[in-house]
Structures are given as C-alpha cells and as structure tokens.
Image (cartoon, rainbow, N blue to C red; front, side):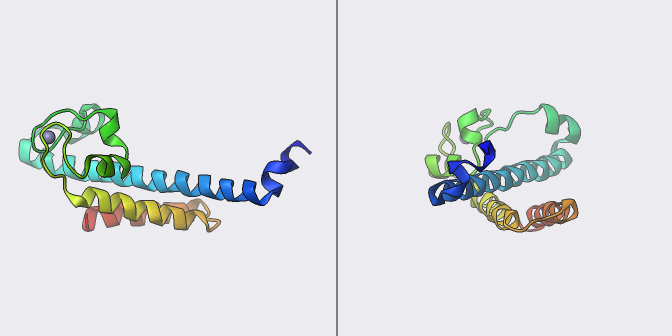
Amino acid sequence: MLFRGSLLSSTEGYYSVVLLRIVFFFFLGASLASFLKLVKDRFVRKHKLGTSFWRSLCCGRSRCDECGHPLGAIDLIPVISFLLTGGRCRYCGAKLSRKYLYSELALGIIFVLASFFALSFLGWSLVFAFSAALIFSIF
Ligand SMILES: [Zn+2]
C-alpha cells in the first residue's frame, strides 16, 4: 500500500502532481523550442559563414548574436532567462529577438496541452513534428 499512500489520495497531493506535470512539460517544450531555434539559426549561419553545420551544432557554445560573448548557464534557461534579463544581452545590453520568447512560450504551452491527452508514441511524434514545423516556418 506504499504507492496508494496519502500523497496521491489527498487533493493537495493531486494538485502538486498536476503542477509538477505542467512545469515539467512546459520546460520540456520550451527547451525543445530553444534547441530547434538554435538548429535553425546555425543552419542559416552555416550558409553565411561556410562552417560545418553539424560541427557547430555539437561543439559550438551559444553566443550573443551582437557581441559574440559565450552565454553562461544562467542565460540559457528557456523563458526565465529572457524575463530575468528583460530581453537583453547581459554582456552588451543588445536587445534579443522576441521570437525566442514567443517560440519557447508556444511550444511550452503545446507540450502542456499535449501532456493532458494520453498520447501514444505516434501522437508525441506528431507533436514533435508539428513543433519543428512551427519553429522552422514561423519563428
Ligand atoms: Zn551581447
């Protein structure tokens, strides 16, 4: 009866599990948006600079588009970093594109909504495909 204990049977426990689930799936979606945006940006940049796309994807650290300063861990938290810095680079103060924020919010919300449906592997694959299409076409 360990797993049928007080945590899940109480209302408070239920709401904290739901809240945890929302936070988890929001940041999963927001992180995916952040990654897909990076893939898109580096793919575009590859065509500009002629560097290897795959190499920049695995080995290059994220940098500020304006000053080129490598970004720290605190700069890479989806949504939170943007809000904490007021949408500006911590090093040079350059304004960041709001597309980063919007794409992370959009995919975060899509993932939270999708988590409330009992999606199969195919269902989640479609959510991933739709997310990628959204990032590559709109943001
Ligand atoms: Zn900068």
